[in-house]
Image (cartoon, rainbow over all chains, first blue to last red; front, side, top):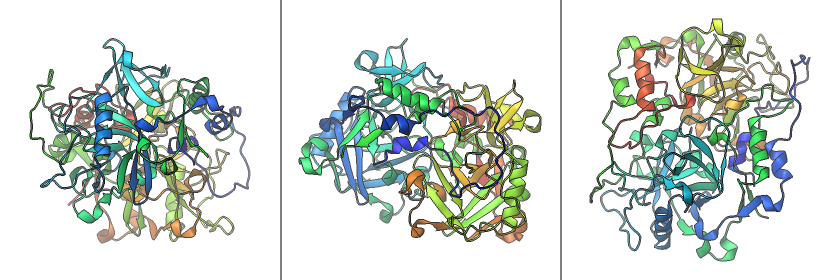
Length: 305
Length: 305
């Protein structure tokens, strides 16, 4: 399986093979190992398996979406979303919104007769940020960022943080999953979830509870036809994509589980991955960027065979 | 018509209306005009019509994609792509690649018997950057950027520039259109084009000739099912989406033309648009970002009625 998060690595290529005069390139960059090369040469210790108790499977007609929860950042929401999954809250609900270059959202399409929540909570206090002391394993990127004093990765999630305030938060990068809410900070609880499918909307950071990241299955969400109603909501029931089941991985029998590993973002190998993307070598690349944006740093995922 | 570039403006909302206890918000942000409010109150002079001679229509089975060329940045490629359109080069060719969180590409799927180029050129010298003196109407963003010493907008296009080198270039933001090439800088000419459909791949800036921006029709491209072959190429002919026609707007009769206007990025109204996104007001927003990334700055487009 080729991870979505690694898809940013490759250059633009023609399908046709060039066959004519080649101009001399000024100061060609020396070839360097690519992200794919470093991933290929990584060791078993550079990877960790997903924690089944913090992994969700959303099974859609087209296949499975695998979500890794981040309880260190949103413990109450992570717990509540698992409680929702365990009371089968999402089963039979649907994807109800797809807004181009922004988000895809799922939940209850029926505003008049909403599905009742049983044991889980309907609303929770916001977890927009977490205390920095809860955030273990942070590895800082040296790169400048306009939205946060510091950025980097914690246990496979992109994060921003503010040491002066002692706050850390999950960043709104591609594939990150958050909790829809109304105007009040405590008006969400996990019954409406969304995933980022467009340019990272980092202005939402610290304004919404982010709970995890899609590890596999992004194309099932990113290609959902855009909704014609305001904010990309669907205006006809037939546009909805039904959620077959939404479950905690630990609750499934062994044979029904997906087996993914995430590269350890506190490993030296991951630092090589980031630098391979920050400063790419030749021959295709002519100018190395010398920088990487937080949301452009790949977080490699692989499926165990 | 709601422009794709404006779709980033709205917040995440529940479909359900909150109906319970509302917690007091700490230090609520004062309400401010939104991007949509500023667009609504803009004057006719804040907008410019597209130049028909530098506008392309790619008609797909699902509808029309409108591309604005940027001849100030890539004059030879813009001219050549128009020449290709005028010899009907792309008509009957296809979308041949869709890579998740990266690009969608179109051109000739037939590597064995490629369609010959008639009057246009097959290859051109690179136009990765342009002299700053050619770039009129630059309005700088005050925001920090990791990929370029200066960023801002020129006549409706996102650009980076380096005053020390006297260079300016179109930035790889969502919806920007570029020219596929092989390893040699001069191996492209416009027969293979791509559009950015994912997180801005700014490391490609100054490595490839960027020629313009999709003004309308992005959802026709961004939702193309991802290709299973390496780099998102399609491995079966039935995955291809045929290009019905690819034409220069000026060549069409009046009644077949689309009529779009782009907000003037050197207007004071546009500065208000950017600041409305940089620092959003309440009640939904709790923390204003105080920053905007170049590729997150909306460039409003509207259809003339």
